[in-house]
Length: 149
Image (spheres, rainbow, N blue to C red):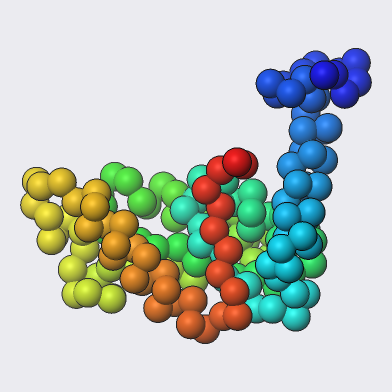
């Protein structure tokens, strides 16, 4: 199904403008349908620096929610620094506070220091969620963005 005569960019046949409006409407309607947020809430948004979490952050800010971005620095060399810089740049451009929490501060070690050469994927997720939950205690609500589905 096509939305207009512009170039279609989505599998649904939507152009860029219609796709953006569709995503915004779906997010807004989901928030309202499930009473997920109130305008008075202090909302922490878990931000990885990727498109999904930055989209959630951007939309909640656009919708008028009081948002603060939270990023977790695991201490993985060559991995997190670039996304932290992306998050910092985005937050600066959009007048959003960014708080960075680290494994080093929470546990006394970085992931690289703790897992020298071994696979840390399973533990990393548990550690990240622990730090995120601890950081979220300052807020009324925590929002995460995984994917559009």
